[in-house]
Amino acid sequence: MKLELSDWDQDLPPDPDEEYRALVRTLKFTEGFSLLFARCSPAEGEQIIGKVKKEITNRNIEVLRLNQAVDNLYEIIDNLSNKEQINILFITGLEHSFYEYEECKALTGWNSRDIYSYSWKGVPSVLINLNQQRERFRDNFHICFVFLLPLFAIKYFIQRAPDFFDWRSGLFDFPIDSETLEQESLRILQDGDYEKYLTLTPVQRTQEILIIQELIDENYNSPSSQFHLLLELGNLQFAEQNYKQAIASYDQSLTIKANYYQAWHNRGDALFKVQRYEEAIISYDKVIKLKPENYSSWYKKGEALRKLGRYEEAITNYDKVIAFNPNDCWTWYHRGLSFSELGRYEDAIVSYDQALKINNNDIEIWGARGMAFYNLGNYEQALVSYDKATTIKPECCAGVYYYKACCFALQGLGQLAIENLQHAITMSPKKYREKAKYNSDFGNLHKNERFQVMKNLTNSYGK
Image 1 (tube, rainbow, N blue to C red):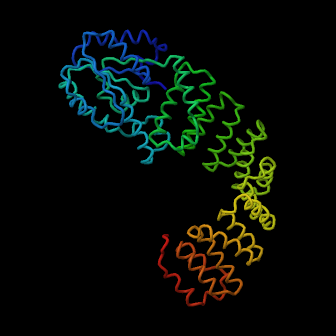
Image 2: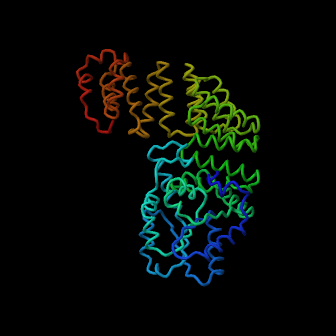
């Protein structure tokens, strides 16, 4: 990423020692108010502060460490008890205010391109305040301010606080050295875990994403580190349900290691999430070619085929999964759904029975088994399955109660049909009133007085 500063970013990569010497010279010759910016990692920033304090001993140097988002930096500085004695004030952690703002953009409907391209579409409150207060900074503080910030935060100043940033006396670049870069990349890779990413708060995920993006943009990355960072970036974006950005990250990683099966699998999962099923299948096929024993990709390919209505192909893939792992409940269940879609209800029931041997406490499987018997006209067996479902979790069984009503009506048991239909309508009024209105299963019940008045039932479960 370039900062679009012709006097800074078009040169060769800066030498850290030269940058440090330039910073020290500037600090030594600066009197009173001044604004300096240094792009560096938090660890590098602490090293710079320590070295400057040792080298410049004739100035009062203080550090303001911000550990959380702030709105009014002027007020915080103005409340410092020793502000009149400070000559140089290092400020760290202002980026925390931007992490929170990045998440706010997502919550208010910004698209991913605007979120991550730093588009000029809004300003964090702390930068609004800095833009408005710059004259007060100059007039009231005889301090040389040194903002130590990561690259993305420097970009924020350039694009969203230009009035304040234009008053800078210097901009110094301290890129991460190759050893530190390797260590930080290794830390991220060791800590990287999708389940952990799901437990992070949105702001924490945004922070991790921006940290990884900055590491990716460094010049000293080895191809291996670059690949794994892109993969972790995709996983973080996937965890925050930013699937299109995740796909882009996986695509970038695969330009480095085209035969890494996990990247292909994750790419397929992201494509599946945005309903690009045919492309997802291509990714899963890549995994299967590279690692045919990876039954998870056989399963996900089957799911994509089922979504496309290619049920026989889906069943073939589910069979592959079962050959590797016969105790996968959901493979049996979705295999049954595919048979049901083909009208092969007996085969579907066999699959549902296998699924229930593994997990007999799932209402979806019992409900699907009931539907297969219902479609075969075996209403008694359908009711057995429906009863199992309503015993397990009655509050989630509006559809089950509806089809129980259908079964009872078809058996001529009008009273039981009405009672179960009443349950369904009470739980989901709009849906099941409308369905019952035109369902021929209810036959003569359409003339029944209780059947007619059910449309006036109150909704005790919510719509």
